[in-house]
Image (cartoon, rainbow, N blue to C red):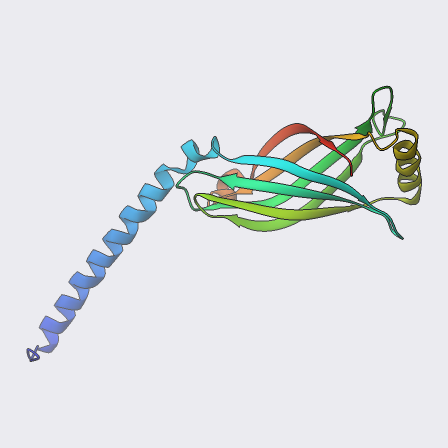
Length: 177
């Protein structure tokens, strides 16, 4: 059975419902915002694989894993940058100013939901000279080559307009396959 409401009563109830809905939304957003800075320290990033893809052109393919064990839901990996040099037990390549590291940046815009793990593939195109030098080094090392990687991850939040993306950097050694 519907209760007949006058026009004034209808708009009064509608305003009350709208006000309550807005209040609930603001409380939830404030609780999520309150988790932003503590959650930044919980983010984890790693390179789980590094492989050489021969061909024309040749590529280095990296598998990156992003982990957000926190309850904060507003993180986005906006961009990643990789700087890589290679070494074996006695030598290194792409590690000096005259032979600079292989650098690659890629825009991702990958969401990091709360309590999640996300993997992405990033491919860095190699110049012809870099590809042949890496192949020769790999053969001379009998396949025992390790890549030293500087991984820079740019994390975006709703505060980007004020603070810009947050850069997080780490170094890691990964066996080249």
